[in-house]
Image (cartoon, rainbow, N blue to C red; front, top):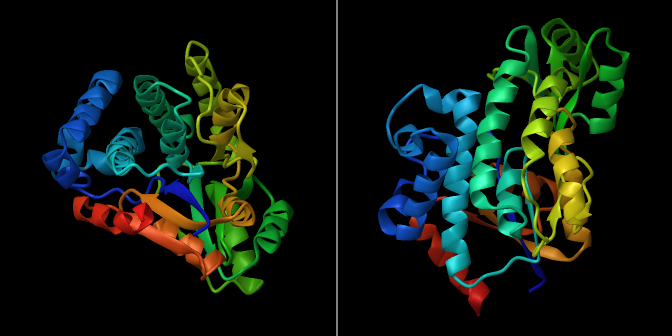
Length: 306
């Protein structure tokens, strides 16, 4: 077996009752939910474990999903497995940083609460995002650059799947051009803002202020940055990268390719759904992915212990 990476999904995979079986079976998981509630001043247990509309509102989604991923992470770590590196998609990068030990969990929960509110409020009307299927990211980027108005690549997820973001009219125009250029599908996303575009710069500024009084510790396990698609081992880079990430492109396809190049052949996806597994398999079908989204899934990890 080669190297192991822990990977964490981002916003969009949240579902009611996510993490409930971890909460029911693990005192440590319950402690994580209580810490998140204390740090964020949000009733995270109610948010995750009841039917409610708030779960899909960005300022609440982010704290709910991060709490769930960290609670699951704790149970994976109890198995005695230590990854060689970590990565996360957008919000998931905060879970990756939690896995590295570089920041106190209370600080991470406080930050993600602020991040969610900042992103919700930065550009509340007139923004849009669109998934583009079946075109190379370079072609998508070129067409965005040629489109009038503010539109750019927000996510380079995997071969054949790119997300664009910006002002609504520019995203619509770019979508038409992309369809004419041969995109298999262009699908508007049901999101509350033009995330990972320069329209989110006000959110970056607010997050920068929030980070000033946070302590960053030495990185015990390196992680791959969304913004650079590079392995981060220097703690002094973390704050700047988190600030930039909000309004910058998520380079996840390149991140997977980097980890593969560095010898990672097994990926443990920690969090609801199998989104990251899909991205990894589309990047290289030979790579192995183990999904941990239910408590019983922890049994899948036994083979990594042998």
